[in-house]
Image (cartoon, rainbow, N blue to C red):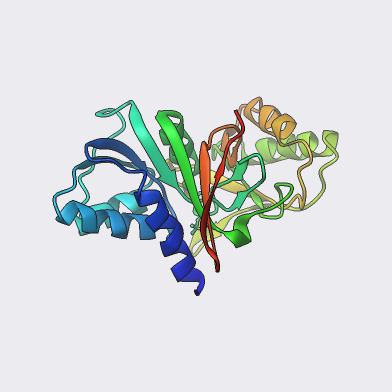
Length: 232
Ligand SMILES: O=C[C@H](O)[C@H](O)[C@H](O)COP(=O)(O)O
């Protein structure tokens, strides 16, 4: 299986958890896109879901393929969210936000009774941090906020570059109009301390550490898709 086929395999396995009539959070990224494509096929066959997208990108794909969409204000309580991830550790801690959708993804996942992550095995890590951690920040006070993040990192013994994510014609802007800092820490031994420290910085809108949120991760590899369950 090539990289795309692995994503499709994970998405297909996730679709088995989607029941007729569900209120569904729909993630963002190339793996979530595969899920949307498979979901759209079922919808075309008469399967009913009410989808809440986690980004404008996902919303566009759903509209194009005919997946019925609602806002989170229409449906503030969801049955299930299916989403991709940039990294997954053994405790189902995640790094997300490589596609810039972390804020809406976290809000939607938090409003869901269950979250299932879909990924290929290259995303599995022992310790989070190989993938640069996206930190969404308010444009106002960018430098002060970045310095506060650097001070926090240094207190926690984290080293590595923290760079503002660029786009074609300037800084990258999220769907919410915020900037992103990508922090290349390499390894984050205490992700919880970092998460708590980041949310305490006023200019930080959200960060890409999703801890204790995923209930299961469906990991696709050459030998098939296997499900890892969160320890309760
Ligand atoms: O902001 C984007 C999301 O967190 C994605 O779920 C994550 O980046 C994984 O994307 P992909 O499935 O394309 O690797």
